[in-house]
Length: 311
Image (cartoon, rainbow, N blue to C red; front, side):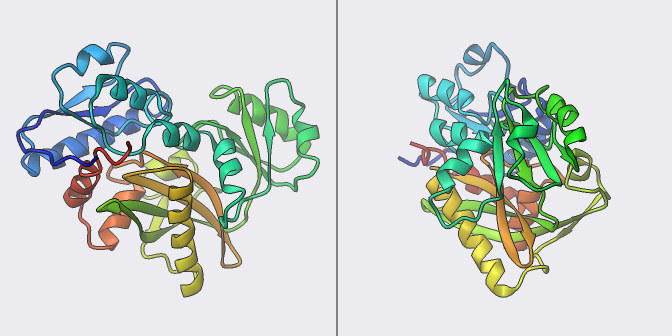
């Protein structure tokens, strides 16, 4: 069921929260609230999510979810909203939980056409050196359920592996070890119009850092956005968009997602799906949408209109 949202509706813009991505989420929420006000939704309000969220949400009719990371992008807040019967934007409980976990996302996509990077999954107590025996260095070490590049490291040999795993485990006990693709980063937004998913233009990112880390993502001047991407052939460009939509559908996403790839030799390799993409001044999704003729306010409206599609 999709809802028609009155301009008088009371909308909670959920942001902040209790994850390591709190500050990014607050920036996204501030921008979204300003857009909703410009669009005429006078009763939209920021709700900084805390342990008192069920009390804080009383009286709200809808939720615009712009939380990032733990509790907000992993199915937890979606479950609360389901219990409270408050329709919300974006992906539902199942898709959010699956896509927050990079390993389980890859397990689902293993049986699709989406090309994956060779990797190993590290459980607590596992010896990382034994786990990487079938992988080639350099290797990216990642917390399995974290965003914004928190806890990520690039390692070049066994001697660097233990410290990198230790850093990743500050965020998650489970760790993904993935072969480093020496190429460039691209990302594709997936939006929905009348319940049908479509890919945005592809955004190519060239960084001044060794890889697309936190500083490169959120510090102006450290990354160059090229949109539409120029580093892909026409065939690879269209194929990347196709893979993004396929990943969105196969993992049960709805409303909005952003799918990231590394490209090498004109071939895209899947990295991850973000079910609540950032909406800050330097975020990828607004830039992708703008390149396709969707300005920030209309992007916010399109996502708002996805309320109810996650059922």
